[in-house]
Length: 366
Length: 219
Ligand code: SF4
Image (cartoon, rainbow over all chains, first blue to last red):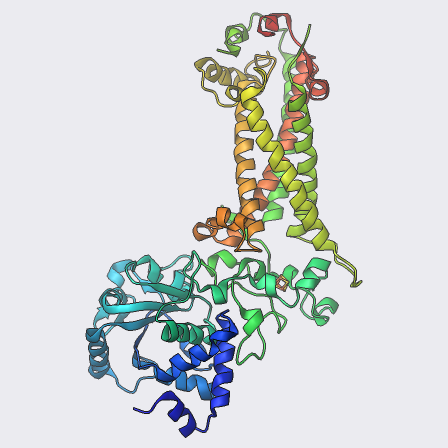
């Protein structure tokens, strides 16, 4: 089998551009630049680890994202380093043949299980059935022999949009079903292709998953909030806000906080690595962050164009401030009425005779 | 006859908390919904300033609340913890008396020169709200630096509850606190008018006039 370098050359990609790519990955992984040669070395020698990529309740958006990696020439070959033994969207096989490929890879063990999409649990999981087995059964079987699980996208990480209220299928993320395999979550709707690639590269180079936070996200990608690395942050601190799409502030590139930007609620590296080969990213393009990579996206992040969630119940929906004003106003009115009533009580009733208060008095203490 | 009900630290803490809450409310409302928008002067630092004041006032508030909790164990009988947590059967019985007064079933004001047991209970609820407010505030402040000590203490909150929900709770408690102030001022005024005991001025001077029947309860 040809080594990576030989294949790179056969594809007209110089060693130099390969090293450049490795250097950018080193930076992404927040590793010291001195490790670049080690990464390049490890990658050029790596022996094809098997990948089983399973799609459950998903939209294939992460697959789409992944297929558009930043540096197609080299990245494609990196992906070529992985033996993708099962992937519904891109595999040639179908039907029994496809399942046989998955079974064969599973039997060998030691593979990376990539999961895209949430797992429905309601009604015995019938809402996502592939080759006669429910998503839950597939996950149980495949997680047994997996060396690691990589959850791509918010759905497999936390349940995502299928799990949004009223969650008709009882959807959950993978971490709530599997616990005995190392798991890395790459939430996002979709997950950024560069973060997916970097996670694989880390695994290929060091043989382990990258360091993760309390929610299982790699720190190199989710170690900081959007808000804290946003290019509009100076406008936030200055109090310069766009008030409507297309207004003067918006045209000047001011902060989108008042248009409901969820950057202050979202850990991700979009401002740093951007999207589609570093072209742009949502806030850069003039739309607030929607918080797609946080737990309980979609429910917790709504309404999209408001900073705070609404208060709802009894068929009424109000903003938190409308609710607050009503609450304080009602309290004031109620006490005003109470005062008037107390006054009336004193006017109407006679001076108190012996009151039961006396009984309560010595009880003041002890 | 007048007695010293609220000792100096209690009064000092009361007014510290009051001022801190007002500052926190004004700056907090701005942070939640910045109504003042800079015209674009390069030196403007509106949100930054409001947030800095908010954080500073929050520390003052937090220290005052903790000081009051400590004082609940070393202060006089009217500031002690058992004025708020109705552990004695007698105080629990007096909750009913107080309710009766407020529900027009009784003319006589609730017993005691200190907090009546019902009022004590509302302060317990208020302090529970304060605890949630301080906690959510610390957690939200820690978001800016997940490597910090603050984050290692409070960051786990966000594994349980999403960040926007925590913001929402923090915002609602601000409104509830303002609602409490309305109730607090009204009730104090009402009791002062009824008892002529000087409840209102007592939080400045510390002294209250007590009824002859209450004399036995003085120090
Ligand atoms: S645009 Fe959003 S993420 Fe950027 S500074 Fe404003 S609120 Fe923060």
